Length: 184
Image (cartoon, rainbow, N blue to C red; front, side):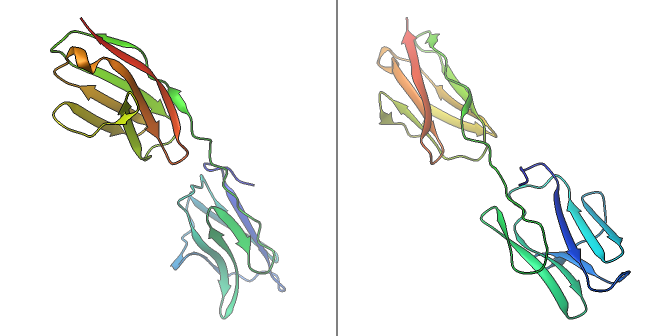
C-alpha cells in the first residue's frame, strides 16, 4: 500500500532480457524519465517509480513494447492489476478532522466578530449555522475558505447576534460547535 505523498513502484518482467524500447504510460500520455518518473531496466525487469504520488493521479499505468502491453488501472484511488506482474497502488486518505476548533469570542456591539477553524483537508463544502439555523453569505455574514482555513465574519454586531455558531465541513458531517458571541 502507498499513502499519498509516498512513491509508487511498478515492475514489469519481460520474457527477453535487455529490451530497451519499452515506454511507460499514465492514461493517454507517455511518461518522460525525470525526477518524478524514475525508470530503470535491469535484465528482463523494467521498473517505474512515481515519486510523491497524489490521489489525483488516476488512470491506467501501462508498459508498452510495440504491440505488447501490460497495465494496471487506478480507479477510485485503488490500482487493480489487469494482467502481468505490476504492483498494486492504494491511497490511504487521512481522516477528516478539525485541526483548530472554534473558540469563544466576545465582541463590542457595532463591531465585527471573526470565527475561524482549520480542517485537515482543503476544498470541503462548508456550512455555517447559528443556533442550528443555516446562515447565508450576506452583508451581515461574510464566509471565507482559504485552503484548510474556514472563517465567518459577523458584521455590525447586535445583541441578537449572541448565540452558538457551528461550522460543518465535508460530507462526513464533521463539525465543531460551542462558539458563542456576546455583545456588550
